[in-house]
Length: 169
Image (cartoon, rainbow, N blue to C red; front, side, top):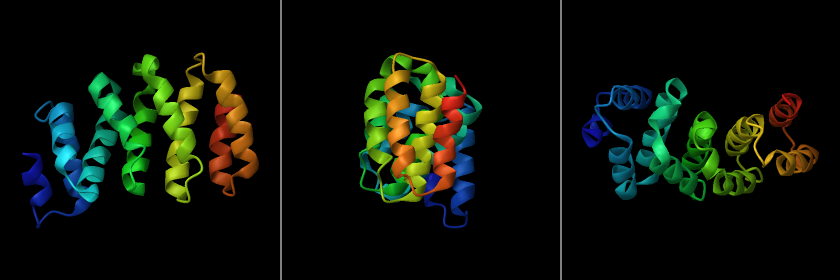
């Protein structure tokens, strides 16, 4: 079903993402099916699948599961900027459900906070901010990391994400 949705030449890219997201949200396509498809897919299709997970987890963070969370954390190392930023957004949406799996996510997100791509940095800031707000054992280390990022970050919109998260105490 995933391949059929993505191969439809009559459907616009955003509509494919929306359709795939609806299938995930309704349970017609499972997260494990998405992961399986992504393992063989080229980066543009993988990014669309991860974006559909982002849409679905924004509405229902419980959908992802541990295997899905580990999958998106691993995708933070992708060469594709879009795969990295979509994965970061999924992590931001679901971090509260995966507090025991945050270590690797934080490492990847902090690495991507230095990426040359603005959207990758913005998405990493979003996810790190959501993790910070959880008030886990990572909060003190994240605060000092945020302070360093704020000093080097050129975009005010990204600096504000970190500053807002730190104010959430």
